[in-house]
Length: 222
Image (cartoon, rainbow, N blue to C red):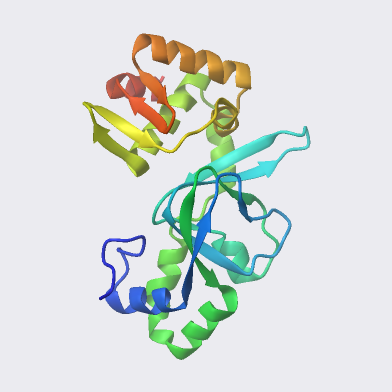
């Protein structure tokens, strides 16, 4: 029986079955790099559980986090399919499991089943990140607005209602929050401390609780 509720649920049955047939399960641990900047990956990954961050080093020696990927999202696709070195790294920010698809296996599948092109190629490229947009958003809004937008985005992708609040599973350190929003560690600590005191967002060992979504929505537009 083909799994219709997993990370490939939005594919047609025939495409999903074909892709699952060539995919290999790969567990990942927090801090593990699955795609390294400057190296040619052997394939791409589909997130089954957990979360990964896409980051790039800067000339100033900082790590700039460009985006996060959660269950169902695809990572390392463009460099794997083109055979070019990756322009950024992908690193697990929590324990999880990926589905790994080898570049050669994928092209062999398309050679055998060209009818799958119209399903698989748009599906794989749907979530490719335009990094310049991330940088524009980072430079053109207030820090607190960027934090609010980040938590609202996380709520959309991984949020679950628990105990009357919206729970975001998966821990992010204050440094990772700073890297995601293009600010300093000190500023990240200050924002999160104030939000905890004001009942906006609470930090938990396994993630966060969004206590006042309307406040975040207002801040994201300020």
